[in-house]
Amino acid sequence: EEQLVESGGGLVQPGGSHRLSCAASGFSFSDCWMSWLRQAPGKGLEWVANIKQDGSEEYYVDSVKGRFIISRDNAKNSLYLQMNSLRVEDTAVYYCARVENKHIPGPRWVSWGQGTLVTVSS
Amino acid sequence: DIQMTQSPSSLSASIGDRVTITCRASQTISNYLNWYQQKPGKAPRLLIYSTSNLQSGVPSRFSGSASGTDFTLTISSLQPEDFATYFCQQSASTPQTFGQGTKLEIK
Image 1 (cartoon, helix red, strand yellow):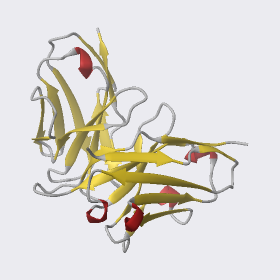
Image 2 (image 1 turned 90 degrees about the vertical axis):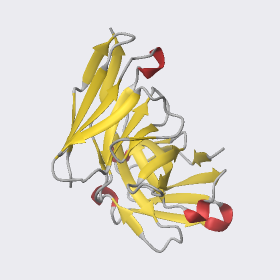
Image 3 (image 1 turned 45 degrees about the vertical axis):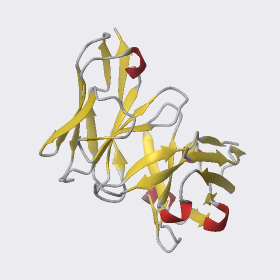
């Protein structure tokens, strides 16, 4: 069974840094694009970042470009999100998710972690 | 960025009802439209991908269709476990964007 488990959420001061981790199991992690998404309390879903299978390509939503870095360690089946210069508006539940784009074209997030809450507040 | 406009934002319905949720893209996205279900405190769950393809394990009462840039999620006969929030999402271009969600409640 596929499983994604995020960790590292917590309370951070504005301007501070924080790192999230996501441990993957039950699928071939190194063969998959991976994503981070987030959901502010009571709000909708927002894609944050994508990373290619070998880590050679990264994409970010404009609001986090230059502040967040997505990375992965395929030997450890792990995905990371380094968040710097955090803002109050970055407060959200952060999800890692696996991208599927096989058989029928059209990327979609087929597996999600349970989410980890990051609160940015003084 | 492609804007996804979802309607209605909330909907009250009864067990056994047929329900339709609509999503309109601000520009052409081909068939790159996915639907997710989310229950309170839980991660989203993929229901339909690429407009009309049922994700493995999803009941056949869920279906998707499109007409141009208008996309529709239909639940043919509501079951108690279907009361949740539904989101559409375009995967045609980056940033991949979501509709604002439709909260489906029990009448």
